[in-house]
Image (cartoon, rainbow, N blue to C red):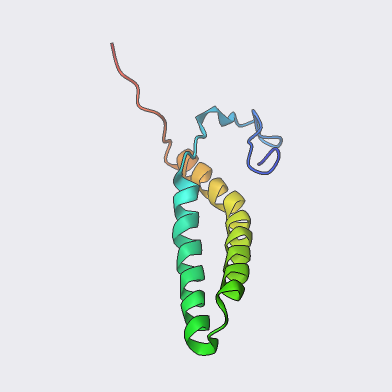
Length: 97
C-alpha cells in the first residue's frame, strides 16, 4: 500500500485502485498523540512512584519510547484512515454552481 515510509503510490500494485481520493490529513497524528501520550505518561508515573529514578533517566527512557511508538504506529494508523475513507466513500466537499 505504501511507496516509502508514508507516501502512497499513484495506484495500487494489485488491484489498480486509484489513490487520488486518499487524504488522511492529520487524523493519524491525532490518534498517535492520544495513544502514545496515554501509554508514556501512564508508564512514567508508574515508574516515578515505584522506583523514583533520576530525571535524566526519565528523559532518556520516555523520549526514546515516544519516538519508537510514534514511528511504529504511523503506518498502520495512516492505512486505517485511508481504508476508512475508501469504505465510507469519503471525499472532499464540492460546491455546486
